[in-house]
Structure formats: C-alpha cells, structure tokens
View (cartoon, rainbow over the protein chains, first blue to last red):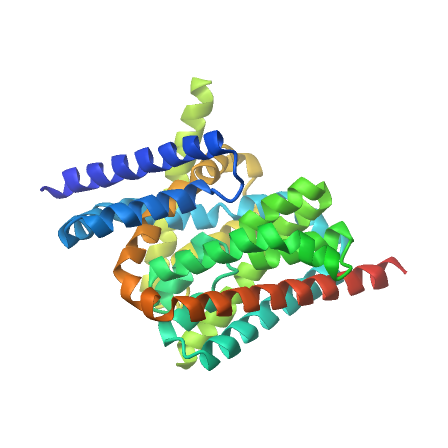
Length: 229
Length: 121
C-alpha cells in the first residue's frame, strides 16, 4: 500500500469511527459513553482481532492526525484567554487550589503505584492522568511513555472524576462554585470542566483556567523530571 | 457561511504553520519542551500581550477544538500494544488512579474553598 493510501484509509477510518460513536452516544444518552472512549474501545477490539500488520499500518497512516495534536494543543490558549478574568479576580484561591491538587495527586499516584509494584511506564502515565489529553500526549512522548496507556489514564481520571467528583466535593463540604470548578478542572481536565459547567457558569470558567494551569504546572514538572533522570 | 469556512481554513493553515515553526525552533535550539506546549505558551503570550487579536485565530481555533476528540482516537487505539501489561497490572493501575484522583480532588477542593473564604473576608 502506498503511503498516501495508508494515510487516506487511516483518516477515513478514524473519522467514520468517531462520527459513528458520536451518533451512538446521542442515541444512548449516557454521559459516561464519551465518543472518544467508545471509539478507542471499538478500535481496540477490532485491531486485537486483526493481524498485527493492520495495527502497524493504521498507526503509520494516522501520523498526520497525531501531528494535528500540536496545533490543537496551541489553541487551548483560546479558552484560557477567554476566561482569564477568573484568575485575575481570584488569584490566590485559583493558584493555591491548582498547585495543591497537582502536587497531591502526583504524590499519591507515585506512592500508591510504587507500593503496588507498577512498572515505570505505568507510573509515569498515572502521574499524567489529570493533564488535558493534547498536553499529556506531548509530555508522554517527551518522557518516552506509551501513548495508549497515557490516553487510558487520562480517560479514567476524566470520566470517574466527573461522575463521582461532584458528590465527593459535596460530601466533604466544598460548596463554593469556584472551588468546585477548580477541583474538577485540575483533576479531571476538560471532561470535569464540562461537568462543572453544568453546575454553574463560574465553576465552568474556573475549570477552564484550572485545567490550563494544571497542564502547564505538570509540563514544567515533567520537563524537570526528564532532564534530571 | 462559506466565508466563515474560508476564514477558518486560512486560520487553521496559519496555526499549522505556527506549530511547524515551533517544532523547528524546539529541534534547532534543542529545547526540552514538547513543541505543542511551546506553541500554547507563545500563543497565550501573544493573546495576553495583544500582539495577536483573538479574532485572528478564533474561527480556526474553535473548529479545531470542536473536532479535538477525533484526534485522540489513534493514540488511544495504540493501547492494543499494551494489553499484556494491562493484564498483569490492570487492578493495581485502577487502584492507583482512583486513589490519586480522589486525594487530589479532596485537597484541591478543600484548599480552594479555604482561600475563597479567606479572600472574601
């Protein structure tokens, strides 16, 4: 197969799979049935049944899609720019909440994962679980981790955090929309932010700011960690 | 409508060129930073410093954000290569992820809540 045909096949397959799963989600009406998660599960099942050469061909052909994650990471600047008033209006709660959330979750992932004997590549992906996916994949590549594993960890954090997080925050007495949005955005990135937006516009705006700051903080930590190791 | 699509297409082409420039700069200067992250920081800086008006990237940027989910499908499917690792460590991974997630949410929520009250006084 020529390279051009391989790319065309991978792009058409990805677009069709994603469109089909978006349609299915609309039919099912389940918030947990995220189209990306459905697409990944369906794709994994399909390629695990096919000869390995098909997966190799798909991964090689989807290189331009993977490349587009770069410009997609850059445009994350837009939602942050639009909601920057939240940071300007509440600098201390925003910065304190994001830093505390990022530091505590990475420390907990590293401690628990090490105690349970997780290999290095899984520990790294678990530490990146709360970073918004385009940035997490860039950091995954930098730290030589597996993209698939990082994607899985990011999804577990996003879906579980947005499903259980609001009840957990209510249970521990966190009721201020700003604080709820910061907790959901810092730990469950865009999926958590969408959930925060359903609760309150301020919580949604805080989530956008939190997910960007958390990604930048984790990026800094990863760059330092890679340089030191 | 067609003008909007044309504007979005030109802006997306511009964003791709901008990212390619960041890739080139990161490689040339041996920067230990993912090029996408470098592009994010530079674009955010340009928007905040008003070097670049929001309208110059808004149409194309919003369109990319709209289809962002589809871009995650190929790296996600690559997980097939890690099924052996998942079979061996799946339970430990889930326990690690959930513990770290809930610890982080509780601490972020409590700290932000405390400082929101302090700031209001």
